[in-house]
Image 1: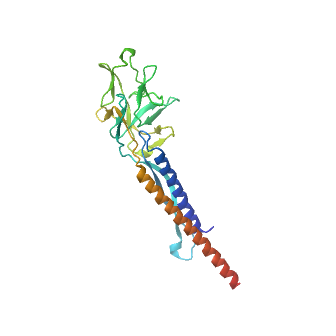
Image 2: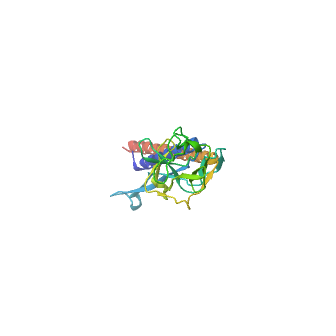
Image 3: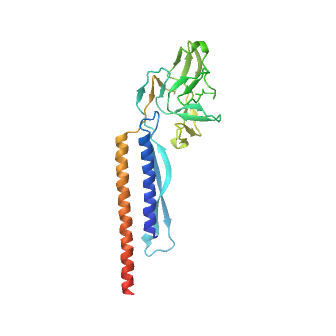
Length: 247
């Protein structure tokens, strides 16, 4: 296999990666709090020691560098549940992992557990700024409200404030595959910087029509790459045939 085939192969691998990401975006177009992902590629240049001409010494390959999140805000989706929240701006709600660690989510479905603690729809306990679950007194379960700054009120008394963490750089956040994310280097948003909307959640920011268009473009690029591979194979066959006749 010559260098041109390796270049085309790296391009096709990049296209396959793009296709996987677009397909995942479309699958999550109705997932609450989901942020559209985009592939990130870098150019890798290999310099040969010798080449027939100087311009042929450098060969560019496509390097899969990772994915980035589209941080555009999703629309507000009313649910009728006064405990549900949408983060208006950057940040993630802090929830407790089964192993005791901290995970993050934009999905603001909130309910009260049998133990009187605020939990997500997946059963993870929501955490306050001190990393502790937020417990509601048994006699105040029907009087829970959540303020714009995340303060949880049980009747007239505050019982905690929902922790919202901002990472600044979205490359520090990685999806776990269960609707939660992990990350490092985040900072708690102060009450003054926290903005929550109650009574609804944030819809996915994926636009299915846009993703479908991207998928068509990727498939066309892949077909073009396949045709180029076929053309190169024909050129090699013709060259070998001519050499054999000369011999």
